[in-house]
Image 1 (tube, rainbow, N blue to C red):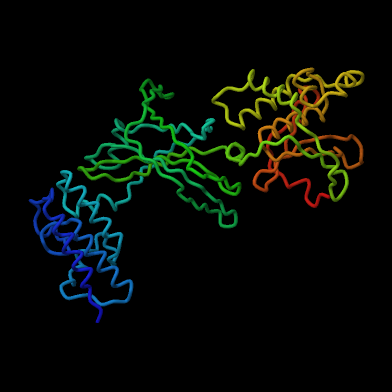
Image 2: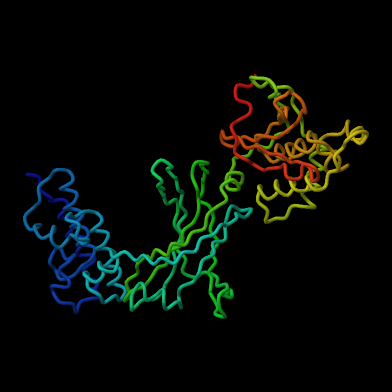
Length: 425
């Protein structure tokens, strides 16, 4: 028969170290303190957690329980789920911390507070934009002085903080269900207050704002949605519990993909002829030193420090659309020897080749895997056109600059698309 001699010795040592600290709930009756007091010493502390872990360790490895441990299954089942395991030890330590810092409730009261779902449905949804440093400002409604909200939780509670959790979510269209995964968690105890007038009456609604960064090494999966959820931390008779408030902010996924892409600045980008099948690599263009100077000057005049990469690309995309004269007829001869960047950003003239080519040069200079496409607009083999496409982590995204005139509505930015150069030679 396997015995817990080593583990029992460890438990005894731990008990010696921690029993010197009095329990905050020392005046409670034996019945109230029996839950969690697996060693029967009248206190619930780290030694009880150690006993539970020892008990669980032996059972999980097929061992036998030593004499004197028969009370563990009864008093150690903190969450009353019919088993004693690491979760119960964690609850014991949580109660020990609560009691050692002045909490006066019993273990029964404590478990009732921390295991009873607190689900207050006060919905607030929104979207948020990333900043240049990959951080976001999360904004949510404050509930510290909202009596209606507090009454839904308990008659004796206050809001002591908030939890912000970044999540990913995958939607299954076949079952019409979503699977949510937590990626990071942040606790906010002292956030900046922002006051805004409630639009429905004259009262003032207080909002809180916290700046949160994406987790280190974050990599965006285009098949998932991303965002942050905000929940309150309520203190009920001194016991802190999480309260689900159903507030969420979500990312614009395309912006997230563009802003978190791994970049390798380069000077060349290819042109593929997709008028034929399979597509053929037709030419390679280069971002010259003169083009970089022009792009740097444009950035100096139009980009601001708080802009993300997506913001910068969108700025240039709109500028080209709204400021370039379509070079028809003899106007084209004025730019025929110019680079796309020079034609658009200096002479402000061009056609589809210059519009999309100038943006392609900017993207290459920034480090995106960009290429241009020579194509037909119609199926009848007429009206040749040039367009830009970007590859981010193996996914293709189409870009069309268009012209602010006859084709003013014919433009898009980072539209997900099936790659146009599959099988290219």
